[in-house]
Length: 296
Length: 188
Image (cartoon, rainbow over all chains, first blue to last red; front, side, top):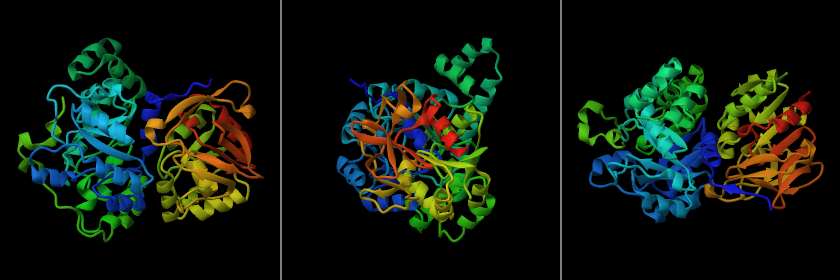
């Protein structure tokens, strides 16, 4: 009998590898999902509301209604992701049962647990989690996340926080690579990360899983900026369907993620995109209302 | 010798790493003029719809097709297999479309059905090949001059038609370099 293994870390991480160099777009309807697929998205995130609307609505944000997720799964052939609240392992069980291709344990939704994240090793479906620094990324990977993204500040159309988080992770990796063996345990203690994963990052010179940028990306130039800073790919939340011409902007962001190092092409595809989503200055958001502060 | 790896989207870096492990230079291909410099082309795993659209938008599709028609060796893995098949079931997506075969996308199911398994690949010798399948396609029909090189559960997962090689799985995600070596022999 041939042994077939499903739900291994290799296949979980493997799907994220296949998404690299691509754009994952937030969508709330099957029509939007089709627009995203048509524009060249490598996956979509099925939601009830995009982060900008969640921010505006306030209250408690939860997993989307399964009906919406299933309709979106029916509408497209590319992978479909969906969000569960931090620590809400039953929402994750439901999403796994629906057959979504990736679960985002996301700070965009209101956390269900203020101490613990989901034990992602319990699941066959892979998880992506947000991180602001190396320690947070490695804690999530330790819990079983097969993909990491920066948190940024979702729903703002302001890339500054995503840049901060990506630079932070990269500079901590560079620092780690220059540390002598005897300092590694203390480094792991300082950043509150599992020691074994710290050793692995030192060996690889990068995170052991794919690392995307998310939170505030609104233009092709934003996407290319994040790629040049070392992202493996891009999540765009509100940036597409809160802009004037979603089709055109979606297509331009996809092209910018492929040609991130080519200013000539970037200049061409940035033309005549219509108005971007309205942005929010981060300092105008109260500390306790910042989504990036969620997660432990 | 230089092998190009199409870098529209997907796991192109892993292929370059596999090529380098065999002492062959791999270069990322994003523009048409880069196709002149290569002796063979790998089309990596990723989203076949995304890769196909970008090949059209940046005007690589026709050039790649005519280079392959003129005999340039090409190796497609997963999404690459889909793009090489003449027919794609229930899809009118852009494709290179030169292998006389019918591909079915996401043929084993969604991500929770993704799997690893040891495959028998006679052309690579007796040892089984550990293969990683991710939302993988298979070839439902393979017609001459295309020939089946490996099957799993009665489905074709590796096929060759002269200079065209197509795998439903991801040899770039494991350390077994035999399939890349087999392809490089075609390019010599």
